[in-house]
Image (cartoon, rainbow, N blue to C red; front, side, top):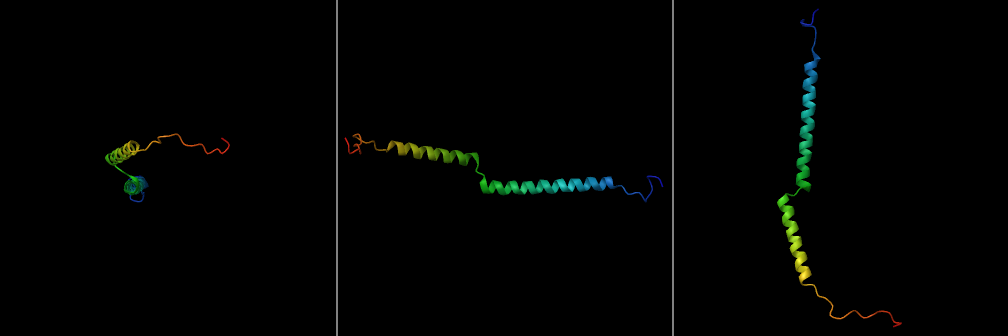
Length: 80
C-alpha cells in the first residue's frame, strides 16, 4: 500500500499533541507552584519599602533617646 492508504497510521501528529499536552501540564504546574510561593514568601516592593522606612524610623528614635554615661565606668580591677 502507498502512504495515502488507510492502513498506515501517522503517529507524528499524535506525538506532537502529546508533547504539547505534556508541556502545558508542566507550565501549569510551575505556575501553580509560583502562585503558592508568591503567597507564602512574597511581599510587594511597596510593602518592603514601608517596612524598611518603619525600621529606620525606629532606629533613629532609639538612637535619639539613648542615654550616654556621664562619667567613665569605674574599674573592676581590684589591684588598682
